[in-house]
Each structure stands twice: as C-alpha cells, then as structure tokens.
Length: 193
Image (cartoon, rainbow, N blue to C red; front, top):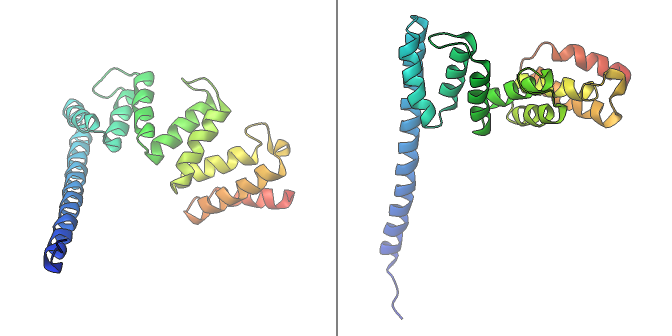
C-alpha cells in the first residue's frame, strides 16, 4: 500500500480550496460589475435616456439580476421609454420574486392582497409576504404582520389568538427594522391580548 506524503495531501487540499476561493472571488467580481452596471443604467435613466437604460437593464435581467428586473418593471409601470404595460411590469416583478428578491416578493404579495391585475388571493398574498418578511425586509414584515393581525383580511376582531401572536412577532421585527407604523399595530394588538 502506498502512502501519499503529507506535503502532497496538503498541496492538493490547498489547490482545491484555492479553486473554491477563486470561483467565489470571480462570483463576487461579477456581482460587483452588475451592481456598477445597474448604477450606470440608473444614472442614464435619471438623465431621461430611458431607451438606453432599458437596454442595459434588459441585458442584466437576462442574467437573472433582480434589481434590473425591478427597474425594468418600473419603466413599464410608468410608461417611460416604453408603452405603459402593468401586466408586463408585474411579470417582471414576479420573475424577480421567483429569484428570491425580497422587495419583489413584497410587491407580489401586495398585488395579491389588493387584487390589482392579479385576482385577490389572500393565501398567495400571505405566502409572498411571509417570504419577504423571512428575508428581514421590513415592509414585508409589516405587511405580513398586518395581514395576520386582521385575520388574513377579515378584520382585527376576526384574527385568532395564534394569528395575533404571530402578528406581534412580525410587527416587532418590522419596528426593530425601522418601520414606524408597526408601533401603532403593536399597541392595538397588545391591548387586545
């Protein structure tokens, strides 16, 4: 039986770790480049050059960049450089939500809660708002907390004790993350407890 010298083993381990570190560093560089490109597109957008911004964001969106998807959605929502198209905007936001973007998940949750464009569906609203809240997004935490506090939209007096308790958890997290409206709901729920 042959033994592999420790120096060879150490070299192999170092090489494997180096490959992982190199891949991680490359991924970080790519993300940094995308962030800079997003900022450049935003600067172009602020100058009113919507077509140019759209072209840049479309390239990033094709790579799954959620910020670019949301920015494209805003162009379609506001009809800037493109025809206003609320459904297309929502499709882009849905793609960003599916890719895990907390802001987009919040927006989709609100769209289901309000019933705008998408039909009103409180269970889907709760699903998306909770996903957003779980990512520490304060607007998602607040909206999910309010949804629970109101018994999933039935009214404050219709919420179960369990829903109120869960609502308090999410509203306290939202408050801790700077959402000033959460304090009012916390006070109301604590009085009901």
